[in-house]
Image (cartoon, rainbow, N blue to C red; front, side, top):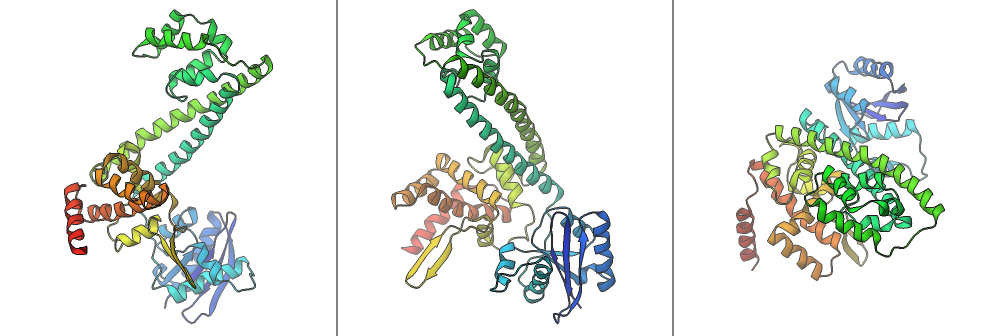
Length: 403
């Protein structure tokens, strides 16, 4: 007989409710989030069911040490969206940990046939997914610091933003450290600037040094000494935070590329036009390598949030953006779809058609991403790299059939 275990997890402790197929509660208890607590949970579960596979653990997450422990001990885990539990609560809005644990257990008892058991990714995919998602966090942080650096320079040294192509280049950051103010930069001679550029292996040090010198000595807006001193100090503080962060992002790129190339599916995702070294590993990491995980492309479209949801109420009926999805999956598909607008003729035509029909940029890109999901799903299932002729042939047949 199958027992249903609802686990309302938290950072410090977990509330557990266990019921049988008739809805009779067999146990309701709390365990702390530590090794002893999880071992106690295991003992209680085994005592009630003997066999871990005769227990269905329903929980509102699929990540973390608790999930890892349950899987390693052989328990069947069924993750559910927290919003599902919200809808099961009473109209009064009453909420408590014991109540939520019981709701999860009841959800398993009534809906176990439609819940999907958690099957972990391969170790390579797990590591790739964690690395790419963590790198995205670092990239967002570097963007924040870069924006602060630009804002700071605009307040007292705006011409510094015109000297190099990007404010985050190593040569730009080293220049700012060496010449933190307009006055200190204006003192530098052309030969000194050329020597500085040569030390960074600049392709045209003498010509660029002369151009920088002219820009520095052209009429400039000057901040007063107090603003210059204080903002120069802030600028250096930002640069000292930004430099190691950019180096770490670069090291992440190297490790992600190494792991990506180790996977047999890397050739599939590398063949996607515009994916490049950043997006191809992310697409593989979010897609995974379990060919049985997704029944069809529609499941992936819903999971990644590219397919819209219908909203209908009375006379109103329209499609809106899907909010409940895997956000990193949605983000990488959105970025990839936009890149294909720049690389692929049919994608650009489709995007322009959507825009001309009144769709916003994000709506057009999301619709394009929805098409790419079907293409990638077919590639992924057949283990064949991207071939544009196959898509164009299928598109032509569909157009004839529609006509």
